Each structure stands twice: as C-alpha cells, then as structure tokens.
Amino acid sequence: MALISYEFKTRVRYKDTDQMGVMHHSNYIVMYEMARTEWLREMGLPYAEFERRGVMSPIIEVQSKYHYPAFYDEVLTVKVFMDEMPSARLFIGSEVYNEQGRLINTGSVTLGFMNAQTRRPCRAPEWFIEIINAEIAKQNNE
Image (cartoon, rainbow, N blue to C red; front, side):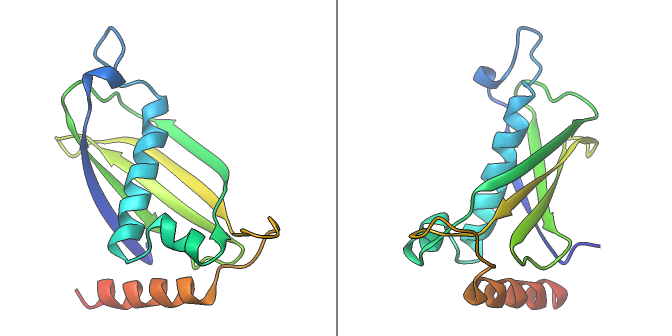
C-alpha cells in the first residue's frame, strides 16, 4: 500500500504517436516526470524550491513496462506514489491507465539527493521529510 499518491491526467498528442497512432514508448517517462513535478508542486515543493534550498535530485534509475498501447487523443491517468520514506534516495512508482481504466503501463523512477554546491550525495533534507509526513497525514485523513 502506498504511503502517499497523486493522480495526473494528460492527453496523448499527435506529435507523441507513430504512424499507427500509438504513443511512442519514450513518452511514458515524460509522463512520469510531468506527474511527479505536479505532485511536488501541489505539496508546495516545485523543483525550483529544491534548488533554492541547495538540493538537486538527479535521476538514478528509470524502469518502464508496457502492458497495452495508448492511442492518439486518449486521456491517460498517471498515478504516482511513494511506498517508502526517502532517505538518500527517493523511489516513485507510476501506473498509467487509459480512459477505460485499463492499466497500460507501470514504471518507477529513483532519484538521489545531491548537495548543489559540492555535487556530493546527501540524505533527504529534513524539511522535505516534514512535508512528506504532512502529506501522508493529510491523505490518511481524507
């Protein structure tokens, strides 16, 4: 069970498809990022705030599994979630559903935390953990 989650909707654009009208596989990773950044923004943590506070979050690993194609003009729901509290890394899972509610893709992104000045790895900042804990409490009360 996810500690916290967020849903983001997006439409498959023509430019994102091949000649068969199927969304190109690389666009799923873009959707993971769109959902992740909007989720962080909704929690009051746009990436710009991380950088202002001297923290960077490079991607360490991306995984994506394709179960069923997405087609031109479909509205997709991207669900992102955290199953564990971040420490030196932040693991965010993703599930993509089509308009019929069919699971069409699963994936994950693992981010690290890095001191912006030294470019050395660091642990998740305490202020970030506090915001995550507040979001967990909020979602548990809904």
